[in-house]
Image (tube, rainbow, N blue to C red; front, side, top):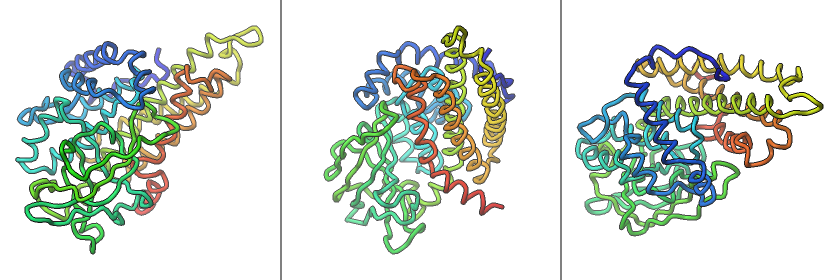
Length: 387
């Protein structure tokens, strides 16, 4: 029996979804065995070929319309890709970033020409994506970015620096958040589409040394008069970038909450198995009342969290998930994730501090979820404003 036994939600009760989940699981088992994931951790990034393999298997752009090379699915299919990844411990593969954060910008806001040009290659894995948003010293205050994209002939020249960019080392398609009007705040922001191959003035900085998520590269990016043609403004119109970003935030924060839920479930399952096998003082660790009470409390809270996440997913599928509720999901689930993983590590004893055990890696990887996608302090501000 799984650690959290919540009935399958109605929106997932579909034979086609079950078949897809089985296929995705088998893909991860075959193409991302433990040895390959270990190599990614050692090298600090997922190998480029894996992205093409994932594209060929239908894991990229599952919800992109078929007319643009996608698979014509919906958000449930994207959930399956993310959930199966978590269940199989496939670290570093930024499928959630590529599929549910970046591709939707093109699907929902791109011009017809932009969709036809980029989506098929993003679905196939021939292009790997990133979004260059955060800047040194700016953090969550997007309206204060200093990177510019100023008109120059029949296009724009991008100047500035970005940091903490996931997929920064391997991405060859980057959405750059820049000011096309430096005198404005929100109204001056545009999203620029950049293909990095042959882009003069574009430079990747160092791969950042993080305390977790070793298999996923995170980098600095630099832009020195990087030219992009005029048709590479997302949506074809300047000044819409901030509103395009804000429109996608509920889904992004829901995805973070879903990822936290997957980690919570895996942490409980790993810990339950460990405590029932490891012995101390002549009996298993599970036999101690402290262990049972700790895991019982965590299971109760995690079960309530999963019911809430399922509710949010159902709302999102109906187009009804609002910003405050998405913020609540991100806030609550990531805080709970940190607490669950910490207490589960404690029940592992000294083993929990050894990287050979999944709980140790979950502990390090979980910390950032309270920061990215808008820090949890920002989540509280948004929620408070809605009250």
